[in-house]
Image (cartoon, rainbow, N blue to C red; front, side, top):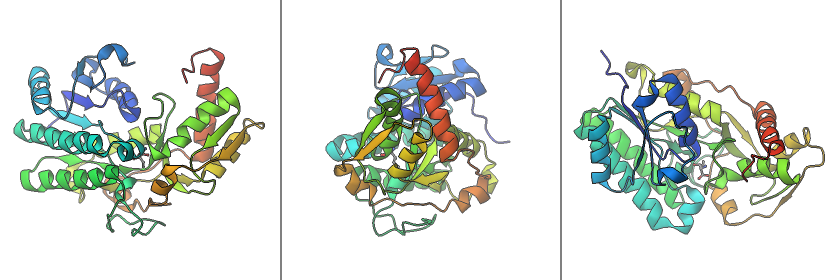
Length: 326
Ligand code: VAH
């Protein structure tokens, strides 16, 4: 009988995915059994009051141990990470949080015989030597960012714990994620979040990537669907562990701007590439996610048109009600 996910902990709960993962987990599981944690103190974290919160610095093993014992955690969604752009400005911080943090989480899960651990990976594991069109599941992983280095190492560590210790570690290589809850947090793909806020508020945006920079992207509801589908998949069907390619759509800033203009005709976008252009050009343009489709029936629901309509409708209402907070 597969062990159940009953006492759940989410790290990085104030982050872009964590913010919405907490709400989705508390909706699906028993809310008091879903513990939100983050390095930001509770008073600064806009988390739903529907469940427990603890301050957690994942680089401190003793911090994790105390919380895991206090709440008898059996499942961890380890979302705490420093993303690509911030990681290039603060590589030591990215290494400490992404590597020491992930090692500490895996060790705690192993020592406590936990049911399952989710560790997100990223298309940032790929580099300029990787085929950029229809990037394969098995291919060259030579990233050119510290974030990418930590994500490759995180996948390898997760796979090691799965094969050496039998720990049920699962993870996806997420593309850029777009959402209307948490504000952009230091990612190279975050232009695709900021552009919506700027379009609603100012009807214009200055993009830090070139107009024709194609990147794989995914709307938050599909990101959450991938996490739930993978974590609830029958383990006997899984041949991979912590490194599934997943895809939903691929677009350029120019294509996204054109889609926004269908709803806001006066919207204007200019392009002023910065250091993040160099990062983006080392990443894939499209992804082959056939392994995820085969092993756990992955299937996205949102494309560029549907996502754009949804993002603009949510943010326009928030702007009209004076709640945009951007
Ligand atoms: C970043 N949003 O830009 C993250 C993501 C594929 C990129 O991992 O760093």
